[in-house]
Length: 192
Image (cartoon, rainbow, N blue to C red; front, side, top):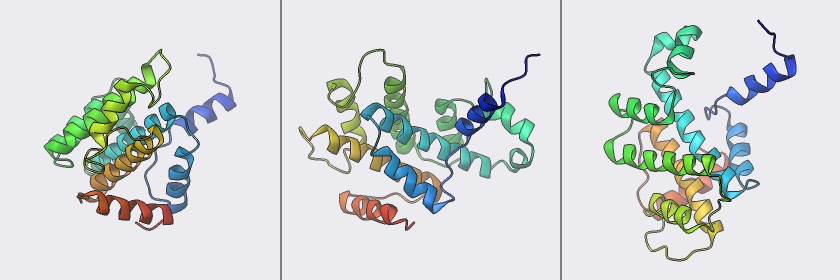
C-alpha cells in the first residue's frame, strides 16, 4: 500500500469537513466568503451547505452513527446508501426532516448545483438556462422578478439556500419576502 503524503492527507481531511453552523464566526465567514466567489462557485457552495445540513440532521436521528465512525463512513461516504445529495434528500424526506414541497425545492437546488459543478461550458447567471432555474428557487422571495441583475439573482439564491438550511435545522419555514430579508439581516449580524 502506498502511503499518502501528509500534506495531501491534511488537504483531503480539510475538504471533507462539513459546515454544521455550530460556530457563529464560521457561519458569518461562510456567508461573507460567498461574496468573493464566481456565480458558479457561490451556487456550488450554497447548495453544498444545504447538503451538509441534511447530513447533520440525518445523523442527529441516527445515534449509532454518531458514535461509530466506521459505520458512519460506510453510510455517508463512497457508495454508501446516503452518500449522494439526492439520497440525502430522499432520506431526509423519509425521516420527516423535510416535507414534500421542500423535497422538490432542494432537489432543484441539487440540479442547479450539479449543472454548475459539471458544466464544461462557461456558466454564470448570464446564462439564461441557469438564471431561469435559479429564478424558480427564489420565486417566493421575489415573485415579481423579471430581468433583475445576475448579482441580485445570485444573492437571492444564496439567501434562499440559507433559509432552506434554517428550515432543515429548525423545521421553521420563512414565509414571504419580508421574513426572508429580516432573517438574512440577522444572519449577517450573527444572530440565529
